[in-house]
Length: 596
Ligand code: ADP
Ligand code: MG
Image (cartoon, rainbow, N blue to C red; front, side, top):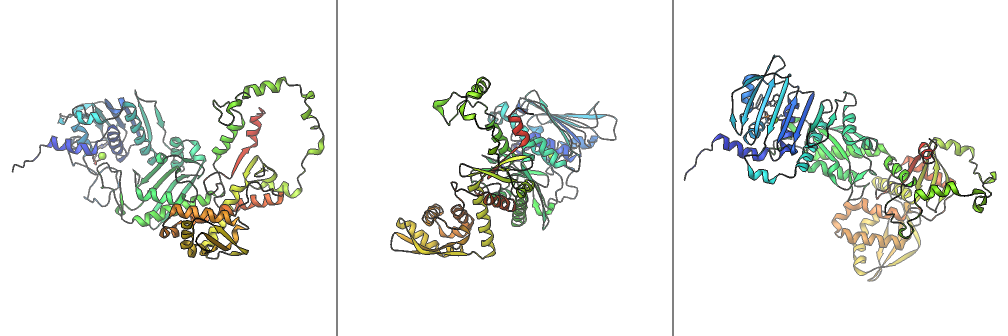
């Protein structure tokens, strides 16, 4: 046996494999150091996706001569003064980033402490440390990393294209900037457009920074989260359920200021949204969670992007609750971008391949305007009679008052499903079926939670014929369905009789209802999970208790629906996450007609 201690530079290169995976991880470590040093301005310059150059400039504390040489030694850190690994309040603590980076690149560090007249520079070229020498510079620190992995061809081979690495760096800096709104970040280089995220002032700092990074669209279509519970503080912004994405790339989680990927947090948010969006859509989320440093272990992985909570259950329930409350608060709001999309559709942007009417590609918006200007109005028979005043709808006095309601007062019903309403400054189109479905669902759920679901007997039990295995599943689920007010019994091999239905559903089409439930049961198959699927079952049933599209409504019925929507949480989306209404501002309508 021949065991020997590895030389330091080899140890550093091995460690570098864990800490510095790619240019973006170098940027992360260096910017974290700048943040830990109390910087207010941090500049990041990259070239070729960080492969040839990464330069981080900060105006933080700087390092005195002795510290400067120590900083590049492995396991040398100023951040664990009492050796308390359980109580970490800085982003760094492992004391290995600079040593690791220096082992696989040409590293230069220039630093000038706040109380010094000049700076000092040290150079670590592929692990070899030179002597410090004076340089002229501003207060703070400049770390330059050149030729990353040039001496580690194996690692170099695994790097992605310059563009991909540039993008990865942007993502990392974005997260660091989100968590530190009071710091000015500037990201630039030959490989990118310059981004400047100016410092945000204390009061609305977070909102301001998230608006800078995520765009005003997100800020306008999200709702604030703020909750503190058993030592867990949750805050940030979550997007409205109608403002979703097809993947989870727009979900950002931070724990004590550190960007993390964490199953507990992701799961809690998914659960909070489960009522409102389809499984294949993802809410946009920026959540900042703070816990006592002693309640979370950040030393799980060298890259420090994972954490372990001491009380994962407590964190989960705090996040779940915080997000649910925020969504409750948002009430019936649907996202404004739907209005924008509607507007775009109205304004007749010529769409390159209109899927609706392929054979009739002609009347584009251009030909429309052409017709309008050249047509001879007096000869057009369909336009006669419009001058007569009788066609005007005259709202009663009570309806004029209704203009103060957010969803306005109903004026008409179109295509037997869309209610047209007018509020003080907008036109609102409501999908009556989708809206009513949400109302029934919320009422049903409230009754279920309160444990007083009323049921209503059928005059004659309805017999529903179904395949045998569907009957088996319905029969097995019967005790649970009874708790929801649906009483059914097996009737021979291939039929079920229904005696009572939940009162909240009104007069549902029982055959359709039972068939739909049978489909659901087949999908969820196992009875044990059924109790957990209560909400899904209620959702299925709610659909059958809703006014169908196709039913004519009187004006007072329509107004009653609008008032109920305003009073019902989450009524901006139907239970499948589609919007229940869209709103067009009067100003937008005027824009459509070129009036403003
Ligand atoms: P860690 O951040 O885990 O302590 P690093 O290797 O990243 O380990 O840095 C080592 C030490 O160098 C830090 O503890 C800190 O004292 C010092 N240091 C690094 N970067 C800076 C900087 N930008 N400004 C001031 N001090 C710094
Ligand atoms: Mg560090």
